[in-house]
Image 1: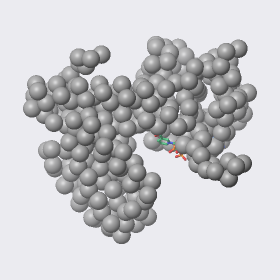
Image 2: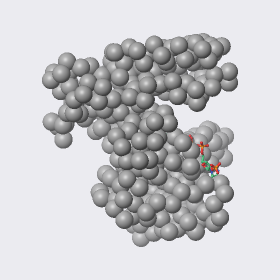
Image 3: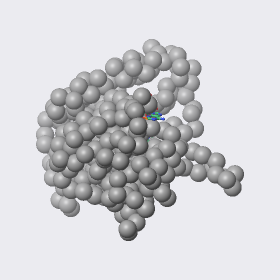
Image 4: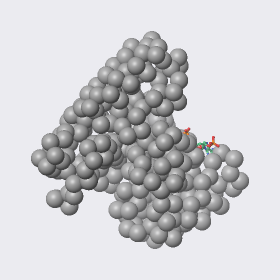
Length: 298
Ligand code: NDP
């Protein structure tokens, strides 16, 4: 059997970003609205700083106004909440992203709860989770939204497909399952208490792995021809002593069985930022009461 098609998330993400850029330009020209995205970073976590820099750069490249707020690692919950409320009230800001994780003294749930749901471009607010679950217009979490885009690029119509979502977190697994349901898949959600994960996986035509366990999904868990989306980002030390990134799927084994598969890195990762820009454009249009412009370059 031929090897799996490698799904190039970087290329798809570049197309999405370019499309957001064209539509942002149209929104400015037609309605005088410049979408604005604010990122709030608390503390000096190195990985978070890298993400925030990458987000800021992509934001500016798409023509979106980028606002960056920083608070020291010792900031109190009240400081963070005050900052969020100020951003809620700032008309230039259409999207607010609070970079997680927050320091221990700050309750993440309370901070997410304080974000205006209309500006919640991460889609983590309970109002948006509820809207997604009930099929209403929601802000959809970026990573699962990116996975859905990759699936549609690869398979087209997903109606009737048997999908397994491995992982049930609020930020990936659960919203992913909702999106697949919305796309008319037959969805199973598996987790750490699932009996015989391998058997569940082998039934799936679409397998989404979001567990955070390096290379847990083996080649013989995958149905021949299945489409595999690997959300996992795990840093491991190889036999040569060098550190490298791997996904939740044993890629070398899996690509010999799957029909299509995302690599790590270069699969889902780049889609997350692209979808953040897409969500910011959507949020700006909804707040301005106008339709999201059609892409003239599509
Ligand atoms: P969480 O740790 O919040 O959730 C992991 C899920 O996997 C849980 O539902 C857990 O089950 C399940 N799980 C853990 N171990 C097992 C096991 N041995 N067997 C079956 N299920 C298991 O992780 P996230 O959802 O936040 O992230 C998942 C992965 O995706 C991570 O590698 C993370 O780095 C990556 N990620 C990548 C992003 C990107 O941009 N590409 C963005 C966000 C995350 P239970 O609920 O029963 O405990």
